[in-house]
Length: 153
Image (cartoon, rainbow, N blue to C red; front, side, top):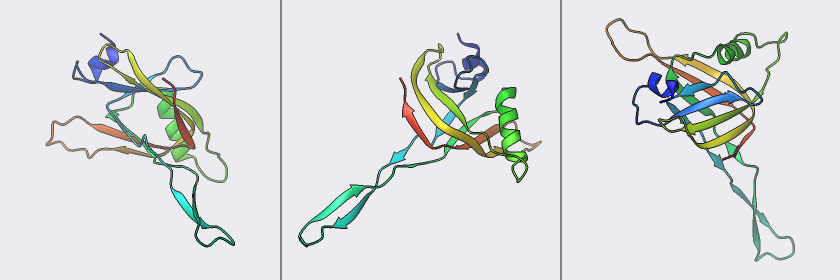
């Protein structure tokens, strides 16, 4: 069995991995991902001269933020990218968007589907409430903004 699947708990569960494009190592695993969503709305345009026609044309697609959750992020590459983006943004530093790939894996670590995200960068990094009276797993949430995504497998 894949070591990442064991770390995440349930041996029969699916999990997700994140890796930077062009980097064959430094893969991070996540328990839950939301925001794999694209919406195409339409705009109504009345035809000039012919008042009985209304054309519906598509507007640019809108993408939701990508939200990834897991028990503490372990990848130093991912941690450094988040820290550099969120802690150093200002007039002296620039955001470095990355191309990332998210893959759905089964408990054996086999790829069940992948998505490529273009120009992604972190916009939020949150650690769940800490309490000495709770025995719950500490969950870390990472939110990414991106230009668009494509299904790759």
